[in-house]
Length: 218
Image 1: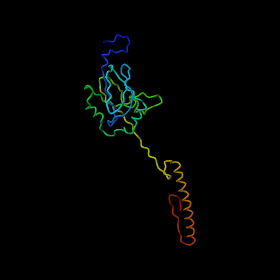
Image 2: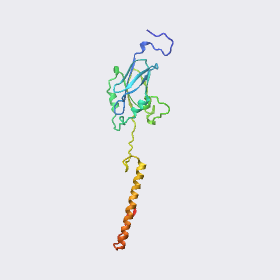
Image 3: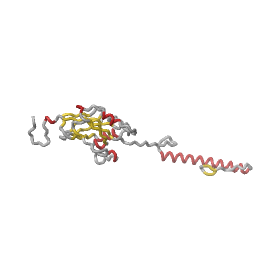
């Protein structure tokens, strides 16, 4: 039965028979786990979703574009986790996976590289690195009756190495100053003793000579 209402946002019930299938993977074709969010259809209806190993499949949708909005806190933690590093190899496992994927209802499969910002709405105070902002990998457009394999651009992690000093901690300033002071104290005691022995040997005619080192003349 058709709707006779005048609301421009109403859709006849028989039109709510469309679907969309979405798979979200990292650069190594690994899933992101337990990230919740919503899929917003063309009627602005929100459908709860959760990223995981299983594909997202939403049915009974109105035809047209859809949008994904993941919980930004959960999504940023997952996308920036070290378990999802960059793929430094030449092969593209996600693209290869998409070429042999069995889509829902044998529909078309669309492979696309995306960024973290494409799948969430961030508050103004959070600014992603330029390469991970919305649209930096291309415009993401999702439509019903298609299967999408989305590869999220990975972050580049930097390893910070911290030196361990004399007291066995990473308190660099205190430890280095303490160690330097101990070395200087030992050097002064040792040099005074050495100079005294040289003077005695000189008086006895042994002719001991002083040598130079990294710490000065001794």
